[in-house]
Length: 351
Ligand code: ADP
Ligand code: MG
Image (cartoon, rainbow, N blue to C red; front, side, top):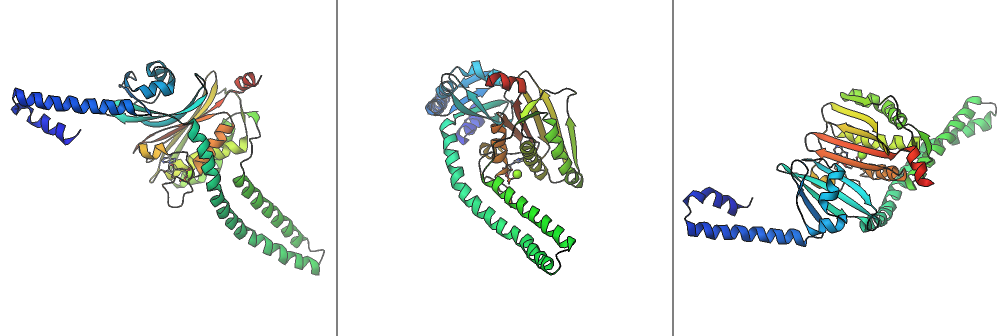
C-alpha cells in the first residue's frame, strides 16, 4: 500500500466531511488509474480468491486464453497461494503455447498469463548462439580429458613393440581406447541432443536407476528419501537412459537446494491419460522472479552451476511428448511434476 493510503487510514478519524470527500476522490482516482493500467497490459492478469474463484481479470487474459478465464482456470487446478509456473498448449482458436505463472498475494492468487508461442521460436535461436560458447567449453574439456588415455596408449604401444606377447599392455591399450570412445561419445551427446529411443516401460525404472547412483550422496547429506509407487502402473514410451538424466538433473538440484539435511518425497501416479512423477524437496525454494526464468539456458544461482540442467530436462520431457510443472515456496521447498502420456493413449493418438 502506498504511503498516501497509509496516511489517510491513520488520520481518518480526524478528517471532516470535506477532507474525507477530497481524500475519497484521490483514492477513486488512484484506483481508476491502476484499473486502466491493468486493462492496457498485453499480458493476461487474473485474480483468484482463496477458493480459486475468478474475482477480476483483464481483457488480455480473455484474449490470450481464447475464452473467459472463469471457464478455463478452474479446470487447470492451479496451486492456490503458491508460486508456480507451468506451460499449457491450447488448440482453440489456433494452436499456441501459453505460460501460466501464479503469484501468492495476501490470501489471493494472481495468475499471470503469457502467450509464449513466438518466444519459444526465439529461445531456440538463442540456444544456438549459446551453443557456440558451450561447444568451446566442452572442446577444451575434451582436449584435456583425452591427454591421459593418449599418453597411456603411447607408453603401452612402446612396451608392445619391445615384447609383442605382453598381455597386460594389450589390455591397458584396449581399456584406454574404450575410455577415449566414452569421452567422445559424451561430447557428442552434449553437442547434439539425440532423439529419444522410445520403448514401452515403467517410469519407475529410470527413477530407481537414478536413485541407486545418488544413494550415497543422499546418505552423506542426511537427506531422507521416499518413493511411493502404486502396485500397478500403466506403461509409457520412454528412453530409459534419457529419463535417468531427467531425474538425475532434478534430484541433483533438490540435493543442492538443501544445506543441512532434509527430505525428498517422490510419488508416481496415473490417470486416464498420463503417468506422472512428483518430486518434492524440502530445500530453500525459489522466489517468483527466479521461477519466472526457470528452464531458460544459463540461468543459475550457483557459483559452479551451468544453468543447462533444467533446459535439457525440459527438452527431453518434451521429446517424450510430456510436460514438466513446478511449484515452489521460499523456505519450504519445491515440487516438480513430470507427466508422460500413457502408452495406449499415445498409440491411439498416432493412429
Ligand atoms: P544449475 O543447477 O547448473 O544451476 P539448472 O538448470 O539445473 O542449473 O537449475 C537452474 C537454477 O534453478 C538453479 O541454479 C537454481 O537456482 C534453481 N533450482 C532448480 N531446482 C531447484 C530446487 N529444487 N530448489 C531450489 N532452486 C532450484
Ligand atoms: Mg542443476
